[in-house]
Length: 132
Length: 262
Image 1 (tube, rainbow over the protein chains, first blue to last red):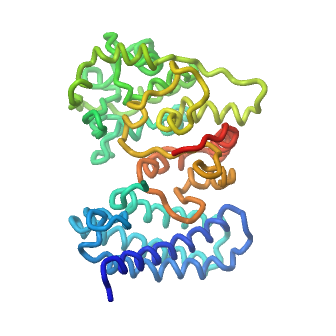
Image 2 (tube, each protein chain N blue to C red):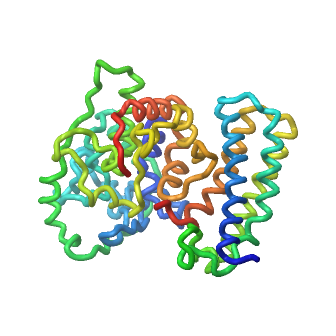
């Protein structure tokens, strides 16, 4: 149990859950679908996942050790930066829940989703390797 | 002035000529661009008369932007995307210059580039220019819509997307106008994806709104947020565009011939 390979695969499932919810909200924000009432559920999903992130990055599960991950060793070299980025996502996804539960319109949801995306990017840019 | 402020965002002037650690001194340069050829240090383009470009004439500015040469005639490295800017309209060049002359002058001295041999030999640029630099002014295609033409101008010239992705987009033009491999990775060393409408290798499965939403927010159609060099382009440039300009970019990209391959 908890072998590095399995932790990496699990971590990727959690990240895919986040992007799945974000993609669903984005489809609403883009005006591609009308399910605006579902946004709060998706936002709660992102918010819940955002609190799981840091513990999934166990030392030694970087892309130098394992080819299947894009997690850069810099995550562990500057752990506080990584934690700060994770907290940014927690804060922004929490706000997205508020906006959606408060009956925010598509524009308000889209604006806050943009802030969630910034939080994602602020970690992906420096700490995730590019796709091969 | 408002036009100029918008243009320096679209072109990336502000992103590249600002040290990320010194956001309080925009356009004062000092940003390090790490490339396979060494590190470029972007210069000060504030109106400071000795350390910036305050003493430049309008003709100097025009030549720098469209012909890639310093006031003393020396060629610039193509890390400065003048191969794209060569197609800018006279009005846009004037408005960019007018705006830059209003930003606060910062007396920050330029730092020399730290390039490896043989790229540190500036005279070799004469050969590079002869091979690859073919300045072409943008001419609207009357067969196409105004939106398409605006998109073409944004992608090829103002936004210099084509400069970064030329290998992937590989327009069917002669070798003289094709970007060299060096140029393609020169600015960031980052991988550049195929953004032609090829369904397998490009973005052929993206709708127009998928493209505009990505340029505005960074969200890919599957909900992932890309990292890499594009994150900053979105943050500094494309998220500030008007909806009409983002739609024009999408319309142009979707009209390109699909190309397979990375």
